[in-house]
Length: 155
Image (tube, rainbow, N blue to C red; front, side):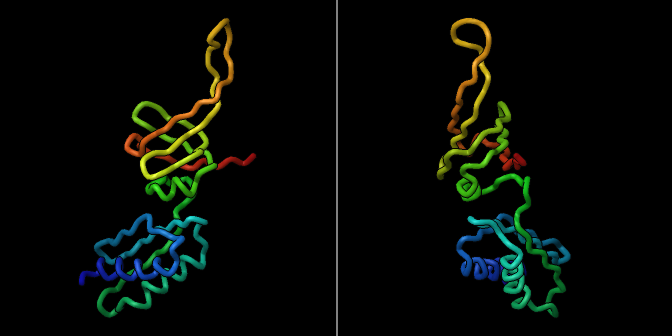
């Protein structure tokens, strides 16, 4: 079993004990620096990172591979990568880049195929001069999303 396979197996075991958590990224460099990035349906706290770190660290042999291990939660402002992250962020504001535009809107729904965004926009009146505020709604398949990031509002 390769070093990467060992780490992956241990990581899967650790996450099976915490089904509300999920892996965002695992990278292992040539000099055995392991970086694990996690997210969770209800977020990830320090103890979660410690628990996963211990499972990996306590079951790898430092005599065989001198490794460095970093386990962290996904950062604020990091792009969403998994459908599960969109689902957990329903009700929050996203900045979504597509091939055509960038939209900042509330994520009102997400499923396995698409997300649904809602926002207010100023548009020319249909009759007469001036502009009016209208409610916009867009269903967007994941395949059209280049990048989506949760925005933080301090209101």
